[in-house]
Image (cartoon, rainbow, N blue to C red; front, side, top):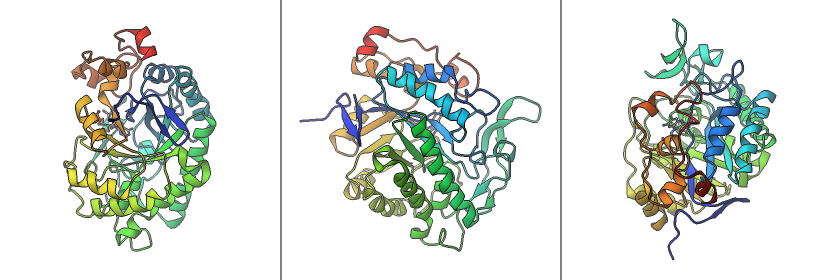
Length: 372
Ligand SMILES: Cc1cc2nc3c(=O)[nH]c(=O)nc-3n(C[C@H](O)[C@H](O)[C@H](O)COP(=O)(O)O)c2cc1C
């Protein structure tokens, strides 16, 4: 019998009502000072609680981990208290929610990170992030030159991931997703172009995956594997000039090791702005080495998502932009109701601002949605 998107599933001890996840999406709506999660964020996430699982926007694990202004941290008591409002609101609606743990590495500017930004090596790529403008306000700014992390920096960052995961547990999250994708810190260690280290964290593939594996294992040891997930994107080239010729091979080798950790799920992100297509052979190779729960995201629709389940390439599918304009996305696709389009207006209100274009998108049928 075929499994459908609308059937429940279990991730570790977390029971989901369906196999549709809301993908992590940065929306930059925090309260200042301190990048504190607030009431409108709790409202926005609770509106989307009929997703089987919500994954929050990337949440910096330390001050230097920040790469975009106004993003919600998970490294202070104020962050924990702020996020508690979101987890309470989502749980009250029967939803489940993981927080995405984020360190951007070199994809930042020192005016955002508060100090010289960090990476595997002191190599900068042409790149822009959302930060403070010289003339006031916020907009896109060119990233600054990183310094190569020392071994002590790496150990500190692993500790920061662990502390952030413990903070997330205190804030009431069902689990955490480490952001190992999209050209951010853990990904920078895996890419040849950004990692030219000559110690045990650079050089051959084993060394370039070491930081990812150590950080993931440390978080598993701290809060339990059933509450830990990992996002990877071996076909995304964002943050780099070119595709990495070894990354798919490195990823498959890393997955062999990750499989024995028994994570809640592995999240493969594809098909975002800069990418190459993920071939079917990759999906087959992944399933061969990784039999635990897999989530896939990237311009999916009801049919393409169901196809991935049918072929056993995925156990869950995540949707991003459809959840921006459709708080009741699950109800709508289940009942074949037209989706509110992700249009130019929606794009304009993605980052920064207030409830407009954030928590004010209408439901088709609020009562039915809550029962779906
Ligand atoms: C506004 C916006 C913010 C995003 N922020 C994040 C993020 O914080 N972390 C992340 O891993 N991916 C982020 N993404 C990527 C999404 O999680 C998702 O992979 C992507 O949008 C593709 O899915 P879609 O075509 O269904 O939108 C973001 C995407 C958008 C549109």
